[in-house]
Amino acid sequence: MSSPPPPTEMAEGEVESRDWAEMPSDALAAVFGKLDVTDLLVGAGVVCRAWRRLAATDPTLWRRVDMSHQGDIMEVDEAVAMARAAVDRAAGTMEAFWADSFVTDGLLLYISERASSLKSLQLSMCLNVSNEGMAEAMKGFPRLEELDITFCSLYGDVCASVGKACPELKCFRLNERYTLQMDYAAPDIMDDDTEALGIASNMPKLRELQLIGNKLTNDGLMSILDHCQHLESLDIRQCYSIQMDDALKSKCSRISDLKLPHDSISDFKYRAYIFSSSAFSGSDLELDMYDDLLDVVTDDDDADFDDMDDYDDGGSDGGMYDEFDI
Image (cartoon, rainbow, N blue to C red):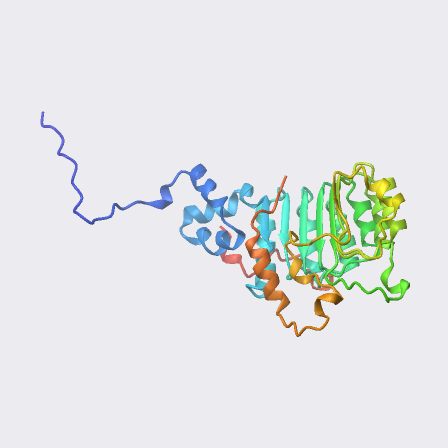
């Protein structure tokens, strides 16, 4: 019986051919899990039929969707279509959604109706999200534990609405876009405890609270400290209506992580949008604040994870990504 022929030796410089479509699905899923939404939808997800099928049918790839840097990179309609496609592919398992300026009332409601298991929602610079839209969408997130609203022009009763709809909320951030420290400003302009009272009355399980640039006063902060007994971290930097008197210092003594109104904001990733009147006094400062913000945010990759009228119930992603369906 003749022995089998020896294996053919590869010529020098020749590259071994591999069929990447035959990669084991568990290994491929591990690789896909490192990619962002854009890479999955228009990159790896369209390489071949096997990759496309995995990207479209494995909901674990879409549990955490981070689109927080997409608003300046792509058109609004394109970003919204991608977000809707991601929500659909998560098939009700999405636990975190982070995004920026392209988010609208319509998109937020779309997510709310399809991602009731959401635990973390972070929105930054979303000027097309209204108080009414936010209040309606929050009704669909009963398990939400973290909510970050930064520079979104949401104010007033929004805190009460959020607290009532999300009883499990443990981390809440409501940061104002601009902050001016003006000792001569009228009290009715600088002082407003509406958000503080909404937090105090409706968010009893809070452990972390960030209110950079808020107009709350000592009374509002006192109310928060009295009603949020589990609070461990409090950030009230740039809240210049607060005067840290002895009574307030005593109340705050139980807070293990405390940042006060005049403390540095150097570790705040959106610091490019925070300024005070003194920063412009006697200077010719000219800067593109949005580009500066993007530089700051893009360098910070260590984030932790533990339009109503335009809303169309008939379409999941505006048709822009229909070609990715299998």
